[in-house]
Amino acid sequence: MNHFSRIGFILAAAGSAVGLGNIWKFPYITGEYGGGAFVLVYLLAIVFIGLSVFLAEAVIGQNAQADIATAFIKTSKSKNKNWKFSGFMIIAGLIILSFYSVVLGWILNYIITSFGDLPTTTEAAGQAFGDLISKNIAGQIVFHTVIAGTVIFIVLKGIKDGIEKINLILMPLLGLILIGLLIYALTLDSFSDALKYMFTPDFSKINGDALLAALGQAFFTLSLGVGTILTYSASLPKKVNFVKSSVMVAIVDTAIAIIAGLIIFSFLFEAGAKSTGGPGLVFISLPVIFSGWGVLGHIISVAFFIALVFAGITSAVSMIEPSLKFFTDRFSMSRAKATVICGAFFYVFGIIALLSMTGEFKPVLSAFGKNAFDWMDFITSSIMMPLAAIVTCVFLGYFVDKELLRRIFTAHVSETVFNIWYNLIKFLVPIAIIILFLNKLGII
Ligand code: TRP
Image (cartoon, rainbow, N blue to C red; front, side, top):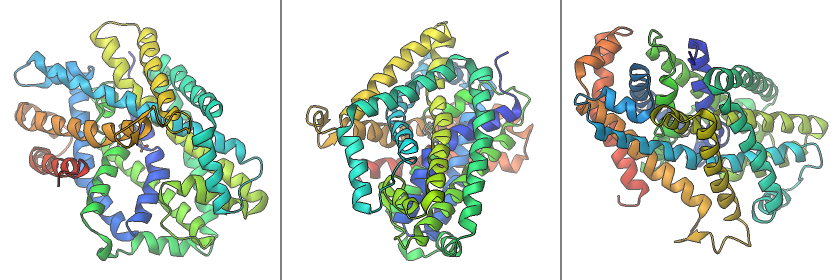
């Protein structure tokens, strides 16, 4: 049987969850929203909302042991075939993967440049990054091809020999590199400032935007809303305690985000840089800091960007898996054929995404003030993912037999825990997502 082992599932789901969202995005949005208070709000969003939706996807997947569309139909009270529309979720994963692969390509570029001269000023670093994304078409295509090829190679081998195995190797290595970087950060005087920054809440910085950013980040970092967790859980043997496994994944994901934050803020403060780095934090601020540390700086730079690639590859494979399972299980397609079709899709869309940021192609590949890369990001994270999460919660809360869910949950946890979860996904979570949704679309 092509199933995960218990530990294989935890590592693969954690591998999916831990990605660029943790190491690149979490530190910079924490910086933008002022540190400690944002971390606190983020933790609440993970525990009450992220984890609830995670459990929602996991319970559907594990119980049905099927692709998204079949799982919704099978789990519903009515067994209504129309639930197959839930299969729309797979598209978001492929679109995210298109631009995620391009960003992973930039990171490959940074691993290579870390061996040579690092930029010594912020201007030079900004220029280097700008040149890479706006001028270097050939280089970006090569890097994107390497990443896409790696992802395709891994998923072709299936759940057990492909996805489980790569996570079994890369996740411990990622852990080791991060521990090494954390130990180095601990030796810096600025470590205590980083700690203070991340754990002293200043509530004056918390506004509606910060709450929404925390909620959006909680979804993205736990890989929710594209059927990834549902699909992985469909390969989790039924006897495994999915609640315990899900909590473990959320803990690992959160711990890694916090460790990445402590490392990056220690580095930043040590160099006297401000905490608010924005999206260029990793690609512009860090290389300048590393360049000031001589040989050690180069070693740390290589290690840091390798950690990012490892974290990203295990996430990337999780974005394509829902589509593969959908095609192989619902249409009895071979895994190879499904991989070729989905691989070609994200490869081509990735090329469109990267071309849309270059000087030459930007004008043709932009519409309504956004280039194709930004559109792919916007359509997935602001529309498709929140929509999928609402559909999942409303489905469980209103179209699935409550007794069935109670039976599944209480085999592993108490009645009280079940009731808390049930009310969260039935009421609080959909309302929170609708607010997020309307706000992101600029309606409220
Ligand atoms: N969670 C990953 C990160 O933090 C990204 C990711 C992987 C993802 N699979 C996903 C995001 C599915 C949304 C949906 O980088």
